[in-house]
Amino acid sequence: MRTGADAGLVPCYTAFMPLVTYEAHETLAVIRMDDGKANALSYDMMDALDEALTRAEKEAGAVVLAGRAGRYCAGFDLKQMMAGVEQAQALVSRGAEALLRLYMLPLPLIIACGGHALAGGALVVLTGDVRVVARGAYRIGLNEVQIGMPMPVLAMELARDRLVPRHLGMATMGATIVDPERSVEHGWFDEVVDEDKLMTAALDHARRLSALPRDAYAKTKRALREKTVKYVREMMVEDMKRLTPPV
Image (cartoon, rainbow, N blue to C red; front, side, top):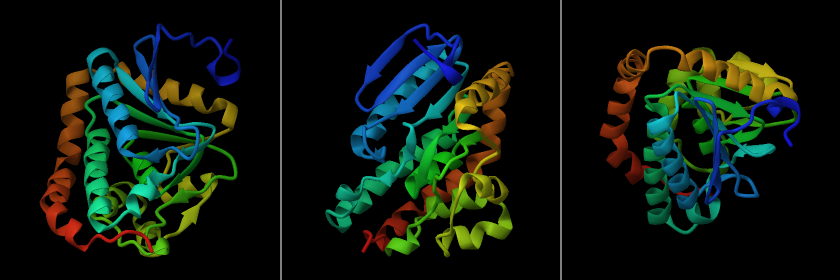
């Protein structure tokens, strides 16, 4: 039985995939990441997300992307990142494709963040069209420089696109981490709500955007973001040459 924010939202069906669940709420898809730990972006997690997004593009009008309670996404899997330079470069390259797919998803993408979102997890947040965060003692931001890793071009360009310009330098070079309240001021999120209202708010945004003509929405989104994607892809090879794992 569902309670709180999910009360009354009975899914048409639920599919279980490795690390990801997919629920259909009327015409909306709710995709939840949950690896039982920090929701790291491993190869398996990204493959499961791809599978869920492919399904959503066929049958949904909008997507809500959520995490597990207290842990939205901790970024790229550190065990894989620390295995060596080539392994780190391969994982970040795969992650770039996953993030760009989210960023250019032809459906409205609503982020429902109820926990920590750091490094690659913060980038997942930035791919959303509307981003909602729950109040709580959560940490949000790009900590790559803090852990000795140069910021990938994709991370800088997503931050440049979505964050408030006066906070961009400290968010990237300065590895500034913020709480949910400050995250709205900095541009990480559009709205902060009480934790028990998170999914209700996200689903409300999803319903509103899914009512817009799909083709017009998708074409406008592509036109708005394709220059950023083109630049990131052009820089990817050179960017990977300078990438080193965390120290």
